[in-house]
Length: 112
Image (tube, rainbow, N blue to C red):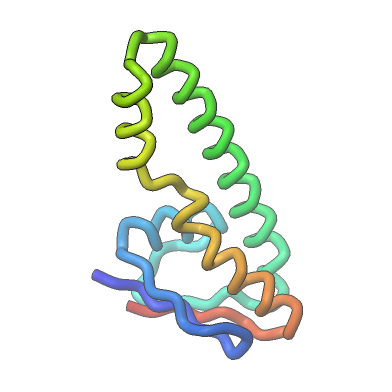
């Protein structure tokens, strides 16, 4: 199932259900079939998502070191990294939407 995020400040964003659920949980929203991030909630949502992305990037860097320490050769470690989709790849478009919405004072709605 797909979730569509909309705002007057940016183009629509579509995420697959598992990714939308994860991001909505991070920003403190229940992944209901539809919802809203109000203007007042945008700063906290941005901060929470940025913190989660930062933590994910640290964990990815730690995993790369771990792969080398466990004996994965360079090619295996690179293949594993290339085939892994990280939170920042999923969250960056929504972060941009949230920032633009805050700057232009528009709420963000979602629905599936």
